[in-house]
Length: 481
Image 1 (cartoon, one colour):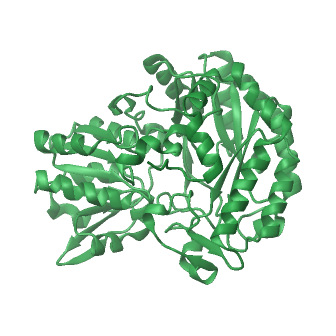
Image 2: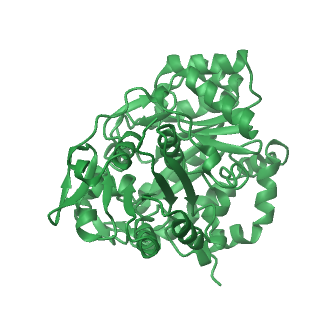
């Protein structure tokens, strides 16, 4: 145990006004626990520190919670995990915390600050320290030492003599099995306040789980600032024990593996699935797969083990456009794999993107035609956003019009418009894509069957019917007062 024990508050910032959070359709449709913070909290607690988490997504009225916590406990550190859209809100909260406790150290981590590094400290005085990359070991070293030791700590950006200094990257954690399970118990209201996307699970309560870090591929639109080019994963035994813990401790009945690529290591997946078959936990799971790493034999094993839905990155049904942004842009192969998932009895969720550089009205229509002829049960269409840390970000102004408004960079706004397109036309095509999907008879029937396959989804849908209908008409995630 570390003899220099400290108290740390970790915060998951909301990114927009709490006044409208209750009307945010995105929150109603999908509220995921902040697993990164929960993992860091578990690691710090293991080192002997006192750690608490405030999740502003789960509890939008958290300003007073943070203010009261800081005033009462005077924590040595307050840490924020930031996306691009939530960064400025985190800055606001850091300033608020310092009003209560002037000596508190504000530490920022996550994809946004890992990409921008020195820029963050240069432009935002409220930020004392940036953790670049994964945070467990780095933050543990920071909180266990004084500022005089910061120059020796890898993986941080700090201030010295008015300058922002990056100490270089820390070696990634080689053995993910050495990490404790995330501190789900530190998330107030877990698991009841959290839920997976509607119609993406059969039973509640449910949760998310991360079984790997990084991705072995290098797509143009993906931010690689946290894990860079590494790809590591937990063993099959760790996965099984993790799910057993969630089942026994919290009664979780379904888990979504929130990995970029679940099936890359076939042997791991086979061992995990066989364990789930031989020693059933009464749980089902979703995962994301890549077409190159699935086949009928593996898919049928996954189905027997409880795989309920597989998400697959399609991105675009225009092969020429797709080839500009990812490896192995073979739409015939992709279609074949989607059919194999469907034939194995696993629901298929297609992940698509509108507005990539090079996108045209014709390419979007080709995407619609491609997807609509495949057995895709559900889909998520993101609005392309060039995030700091992605390969496209550096040259994005050459490829179209980009309005870099961080608070709107959440894949739900067209901040980037490719040459030859307008934002208004992209919005109409976006709505048309969803309407085309949901108006097909086989898709409608698929959702009707959710009455008995996922009754909790229908309960949530009916309770929020007005919000969903307004979103379908206006494409505005926030209800207007």
